[in-house]
Length: 344
Image: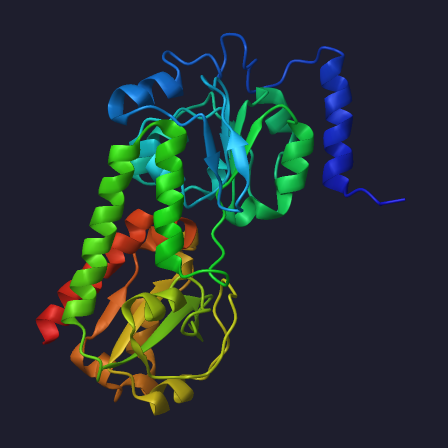
């Protein structure tokens, strides 16, 4: 007999209790709580940019029949929160703890009616049952809970929004994901504009880059300078493929969210002319850790590296670690274009 996880056992116990009439803290999705929107998401989205599709092909290739007028929407994928917020999509439950705290997502952080699912390590899956969703968009850190979510809300339309950079290039998948979201929420025109801005930023960066420049990707975390390998490295790695950058280091790496261990001496020996850096601690709000700038400036081993001497360092937006969406990549590619153009 298959052994159930503690999370699933706890959720099933909650389901039983809910059937007996317990009231969830997030409000009844059919009453005056979070699910009773002033205007339905489908109606407001259609008014802005078109009509929502009746069915879509999600990121896993499944055809999903969408509800005509979703009243309770659960979203878990960090790569889509910014887009949904910009489109005014009202959520009834989401892992708010994983959302960057910025103006773009203020509507979600400040909405006490949204049931906070916590984070992916110990999610409050009971909250999903409480809001009785008719539409779930799931991906990234919550990919592992796909089966649980479908069991907890079997009547909800389940849309897989996850991106797998090992399967297809990042830029292709970001375009596909953005198109998918536009179809789901009737925001096709806005989705096309996001993709156009994204493509323009790539073209700018590619045009300004000199293929003779060598580039290294780094992730700083917990006071350490770590390596983000081309292609596979977290956040920074896919940039090498999209822009066809020349790696300073050919060393293989993993998708580790903290980066892979590498000595600063190895970075110095590689002598990169450019550095692309993700400050993970800034993204997680760890005020105790030294910033990426401090770590690089204070490393004696790196002081003779061309990238350090010339100031050829591009830092990712601190929110990047908990976003990685099309908007943040567009911003990064434009930042790289600006830096490359200045150095040319």
